[in-house]
Image 1: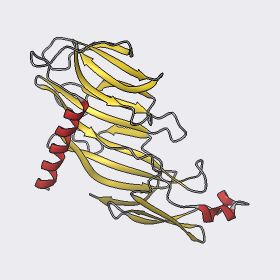
Image 2: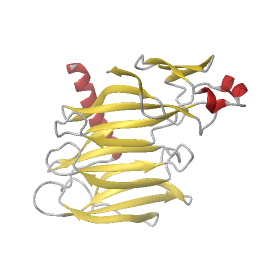
Image 3: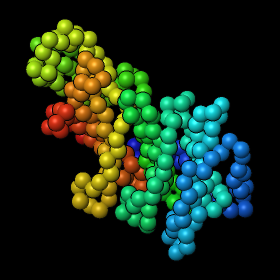
Length: 261
């Protein structure tokens, strides 16, 4: 567990460096506004806990007429920049929320896919006197889950589900009435897990520190056919959110299987 925590901390540090998060000061140049940048949002808030408000500006960068990246600038200094991931994301936003229950708000940086999967990404940064530190960053997969999951139709209205990363397995029982006159299409069921489309931030265990739950749909014969919901729960450990549990439910939210990580 100690080794796992150290690795997670290193990953978070690397992610902050890659996104351009910095520490305002003489060693960092002021943010330069260019013609392809457009202001998306402006607000003022005390981010550092020093009882003074900073000016926060959220910019969208466009290249060839489409969104290419988004940047959060605080008092004229660039603090975080995330790109569109080869146009997977076309919209973005940020908000302030106390996620970890300590020292004021964190910065929640969302990006959105406008396709039918409604995929989202969320990066959470914790501001401080020494700059920003990334405490949550989970990659989103738009490959229909084929790199991680294995889904097969077994016959008799049963579908096998396996998460090859965690080892979670379950046989999903399909409701026969849903597929009346479409039984032949059941043979088409194969690996199809939508990207993360929702992030639930709430205090599950009552310790005044929020957990973060990612939500993905498991698809059957077609995109509207939601045969299960996959949830990954993350807990704050040593200042960084780490995977804690994976849960599989049916579409109505009833538990099918879960595994501690």
